[in-house]
Length: 131
Image 1: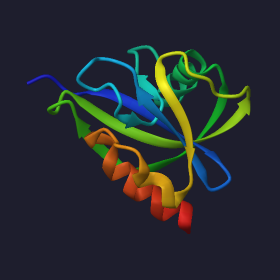
Image 2: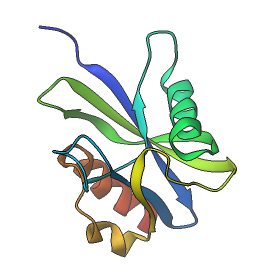
Image 3: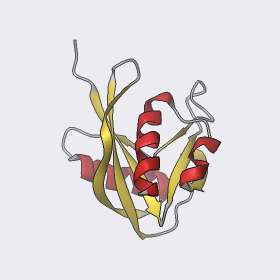
Image 4: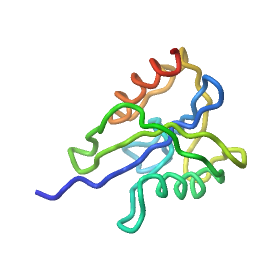
């Protein structure tokens, strides 16, 4: 069996709020929410992938911090999601590839339908944001 592909997500913080992004595609995932990010390319680190993906998807520069939770299996085991805290360095996030962006406080995290693979990170994040 092939090793799962590493996918990274950025839990970008603004105080106690975190940025969430609604998928625009593929159709079966459209309208579900996730942390911005994407696949790690063979020639880059997870941090480099997050910086690149946030620049491409949101038009922002970020600094990457600590991991949020553990490894999360998604896509029927084809992907391994790793979520990291991140801070904005430059720019204001805007949609390029997503249908919508929202800043969510800890008590608002359940106000959007998350991708199932992101749910454990959301639960871990809630505890960390409330700490």
